[in-house]
Amino acid sequence: MEEGDKRYQLELNDIIHRYNGRTVLTVEHLPIERGKVYALVGPNGAGKTTLLHIMSLILRPDRGEVVFEGERIGYDESKRTHARRSMTMILQNPYLFRTTVKANIEYGLKARGMGRREREWRVGEALEHVGLSGFASRKAHELSGGEAQLVALARGLALSPSVLFLDEITANLDVKHVSQLEEVIKRINLERGTTIVMTTHMLNQAYRLADQVFSLFDGRIVSSTMYNLFKGEFRHDGEETLFDTGKIQIYFTAHAQGREKGHVSINPKDIIISKEPLNSSARNSFLGKITRIIEQNEVVHLGVYVGEEFRVQITTRSFHEMGLTLGSKVFLVFKASSVHLL
Amino acid sequence: MDYIIEGVVRALELIFSLDKEIYGIVGRSVRFALTATLFATLAGVPVGFLIASKNFRGKPGVIVILNTLMALPTVVIGLLGYAFFSRSAPLGFLELIFAPGAVILGEFFLSLPVITNLTLSAVQAVDPRVYLTARTLGAGRLTVAWTVLMEARFALLAAIIAGFGRAVSEVGSAMMLGGNIRHYTRTMTTAIALEVSKGEFGFGLALGLFLLLVAFSINILFHYFQVKGR
Image (cartoon, rainbow over all chains, first blue to last red; front, side, top):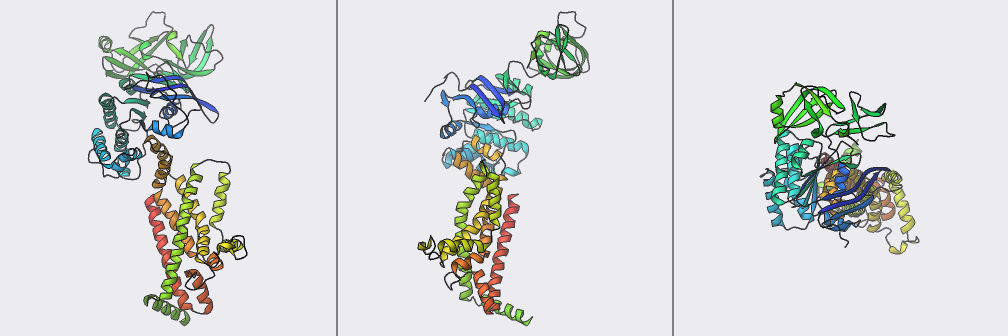
């Protein structure tokens, strides 16, 4: 048995995965610590699900290694199945087998050779955990979308996995079921110490639930947040380079030599908001209107439309001092060096 | 017209008098067809599953051949069977010709492509998330395969019933390989052919009614499982 770094529960090293001859994922190093919550964010096609499938040992990467519990997991299928039994994954559109809720939850327990009594106890406990006690004898295919997602979660929880992978599990749910699921996720992590790795499109959700957020773009882990992500063309204006989204032009300092099109992102924390024009060294200044206000834990997230929709983050105190309301006209100011090229 | 009415009356007499000859033939036919279907299921379901779930070179060709074999004339099976199992043939030492084993073998080869092909279609129609879900829940390869088959169970039952229907209704290979020997290899279809040629229309009709009953039951079951599987 070859051993990896024991500090981490799960570790990915030098992963490369191709699909139809195209490299869709390149991850140099991704360490996952025991008992923490991680979120993978990024636009569609960024490689989130592929990465999740490689981490959960469903997919074998073309190159690189996955280390789980200090042991390098190779290509031997029985070894992979054995390691997979310490983890599970809940899908965005979960598939419930055409049988009862109870039989669905028992499935993974039977695969682990668990006895009937233990199975029944676990089914009851898992259903209680997701607030669906009394659903055991219901037919799985007669459940609503939200109930089905909760049963899928109960099916995963019954296995008491040490790592739980969640693939966009709140994507198609109503607000009520989203908050119910988020509560369950937090409780599993706190009470059981389960490591959770989730993909999500909802950046707020990622930053709210996760200890660490990994941003994925074009199959690579990037340092920028996925807020204020814009697509556009690079234009040269004398010595400076501009990024043209088609609606606004953004100055930036990053090196984009030889590239005609691409993406940039700006961290909401790097943007200054002002009611008056600022006389500063910052190269980017736009006048816009507040379109959204979300207050959360001493921080206010503002949506500001300046031709493109920007996300800005300020403290609750600043928000109240400035007397901002929906529709207020504000200036957005940020440095050219705050613009990250992806 | 009288001829037909007399035949129907005679057929009903034979059926309701629980004629041993008639019921013996019906029982033998069903037994042969069930045995052939059982073996065709054991072979056809795994093969159909493998073809459906694996990607390999020549897969479209294999599917075309399977489709063609579904419509294979029964006399061709009889002919091939005779070529291999008659006394002087390469496999003649097995002494299968004109014995129940030969009839069952012929029916096996007729229902095998039906079961294989319909299994293939059933497995291909299974939601791809079944494989992924089973694996994320820690199932090994065999359990994953079993789960996929269970999810396609209604379509699979329909496939097996269709295979049985093909076996029980065939006449060509049973006649050529079984020889239509009374109390031994005579089945409903071979008996009908013989009795009608002898002028025993009522006897033939009685067996025909039984065959119709079997076909009707098969179709009801087939329809039931197809509807349930949707």
